[in-house]
Amino acid sequence: MRVLVVEDYAELREMIEAYLSRRDHVVQTCANGNDAVRIAADFAPELVIMDYRLPDINGVAAGIEVRKAAPAARIVICSASEREQFEASAALAEHGFTYMDKAQFPAGLSQLLPQQSEA
Image (cartoon, rainbow, N blue to C red; front, side, top):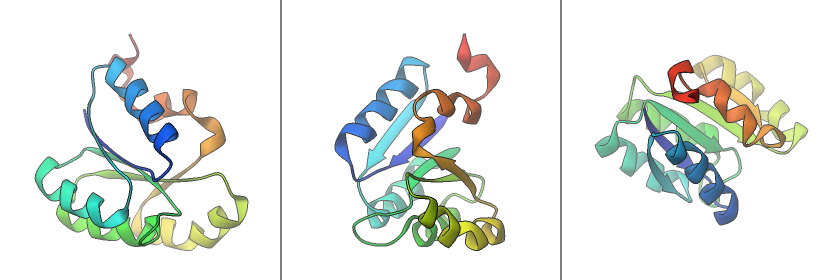
């Protein structure tokens, strides 16, 4: 599976990348929403794991643009803040995005992946 990880916190981004790579997924990473849109156009991710709070634009706004570049991608917006989850909830439903609490990392990532990758 092609996965794009968009997270500005380098240690978390690297941890997610390592987790996914060990399970034989092809992973691209970046630290902001504008780079995510650019990468998605060429990479065509099947799954996008995107931080809600990014340094340039929020994850929902970036996700909307990524969806234009990669219409088939499943987009998961992540946050460690209940307030941010509440702020994003209407947009998540409107655009068909999924939410994941960062407290569920890394084990919760397995719920986003095809079953055969868990061998």
